[in-house]
Length: 301
Image (cartoon, rainbow, N blue to C red; front, side, top):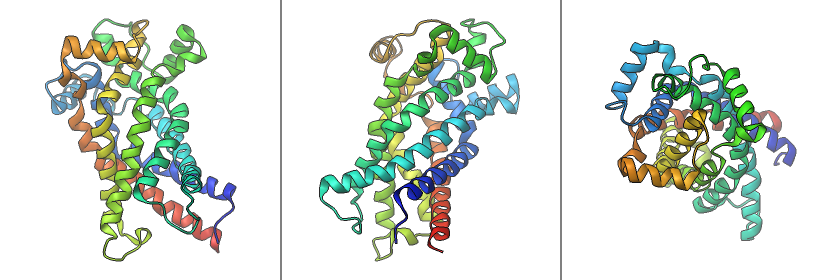
């Protein structure tokens, strides 16, 4: 028997929050390197140089700058994302005339994930804004774009509210939506496609072992980033550089990067992102699936 929709939503929300925590803890240093290289592409020779330079300048803790808002961002995003993913799967079923007992196709799941990302973007944007600014704070201070002493979560939040009010927390929302909607189509589509391949021998997707689930999560993450990485680069620029004053919108920032820095600048930081995606998204889906199954068993019992 399926749980009541409200109970199912709570289970999906809780499992998504647990998965988001595992995602951050397993991949934060690589995410920090990604944001630094996206925002200041000429400052580092590569991600190894970025790691070493950051370590020499501010120590190992420098690779974990923004961990608190990153945890907040990922817990908020993934709890809402997976909760809405369940609802959106039902919407897709209804639109396609599919009964509840029939599994959605991989494309159907991808469409549901894309719909769900609209809702998760609304909670992700403010927390990701703070995270990105903290991660690139040292570079902003060194380049003289801002004064020193703004390197705490609260100081960043106060600065945003002072300069832009509550709506200032949504700088980069357009870029976030442009990234998330197609990105999560490929994210969930890639994950479900990979699971289908592993289950092609007659197994159930729900009975796959740890390694297939971890690989499928990493594959879904790789599909996401390869499809939308330049958009994420523009978003990071807008959210970080707006600390120094009014920043141009998505299209102007995009065309400015291409015109003055070239297309390769849009892919700066891709290497640490791709290295991070397998352990981080593998951990995300593994902990999500395991915790969801455990909570579903508690309901059944």
